[in-house]
Image 1 (cartoon, rainbow, N blue to C red):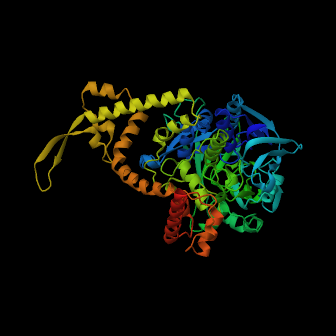
Image 2: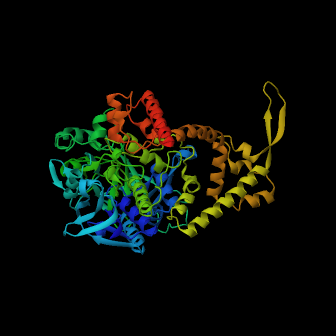
Image 3: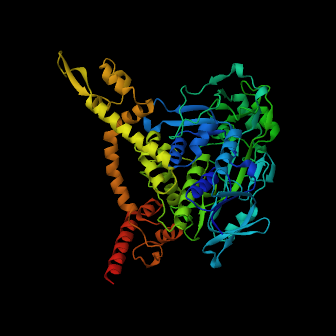
Length: 624
């Protein structure tokens, strides 16, 4: 008997087993390929806008993706540097080989974890399929557990498309999980089908880099992890090129051969990561599309042309690739392809990522309709933590929308569900001024330590950082600067002294400029703090007024989120609700009024009726 079984060893699976094992659960990881633990199936990168926020939150809670990214990074950049701190994000180019090695090394050091190479054919269902008691492997083994977490990625009934050619696969070179997908349907889960894709892999030795635009990383390089400097690999460059009208014409002339436009694929792909076929057709006015040529590993000749996902036949892929500047003689090592796979509609989940109807079964990653390593890892961590807490008979660990991008991600999935692959953006977070990358530890490290995930030595580092931040805030609140200004409609100039903390509220104010000419004793004190610490405190001053307004909005939001709907509530017994509203409530089974409010088609009037009904039921129950 295991405490937790995790099926799948991608980015969600890694975080799930790490969380469970760290929380002292007897944990079993079942994977179809031990060699491919932590495989980067698509682009060789971690982070980006919205996604980088997720990585920092995972790290702040005690997860591993941030450290793995830092240890395997071969180029680091901060995106949106000309915009405000709330939308600035870290992105790293990863060495895919070293990322896998570091992931396996990390899991190998967990005393409570055992890893076995097996395919899971089906689940061990209880009578009536109301709970799960373990799994059945391809060898006929029945392995029991108190909780099962499925992190199956694109493997459920996966089918790869390259032109008119199609074959079953979870990803290139690996078998799909058809039996498990069928078993979930038999268990009563509502399933859908999605599509994603990847680009061809190009031979580095056949690319003419001399005529391409070089893109170097930042120096000094940013990092993801709060807990140390793990960067150790040589840093390298990416390169930028563009498609052209000739490239577009080749694609247009062969659209009938594309799996997408030839009728072989009917499922929906990621809106924000379209294939090159989609770009050419849907943005016909564009004369070119940008391509980032990214190295996949320091030990490999493979380059990844980011922005060129395709399901065209191999010969067509080669033709349009060779029409692009710098790629006239390029060779394709591996073709790009599209992959279709089954997923579970996520409105069937609780905020803990346990299924509403099936006890002890948790889902995380692309099985829930998301796309991206970071989204998967965030869900894996939360599933691992919540499965462990349930076994310990403790309340689930839930992050609200005002607390973390992880909270936004899970809330969106459950209340809005999804019919297309879900990707995180800063625009999805209405409280994003509070949810910056630089303050992820302030928001979450205390919580990570409380649930038993964040290690003690890291927590002590966090506490020390908070003390330093308080001292720096006090320092900037105590020093004044002489400034000059003109009175309106007056020619005379007024000189006055104002606190640095007040001047920093100006969006254009810069700390380094403001402190020029201040006493050496003050500057010596200021230089004791790191650039990151100064940026964090400066951001707090700049956003203070906006944050106060957002905090008022949050109070209203939390009021609805804290009104819980009884689990066994019969919506047909609620007078005044329309048939459509009842059907949506029965289908989605919201846990709070806040969740019900976000379901499409639930009107304010319906919410009022439901709220009054719940209050009456509580009142009657309290008087009995």
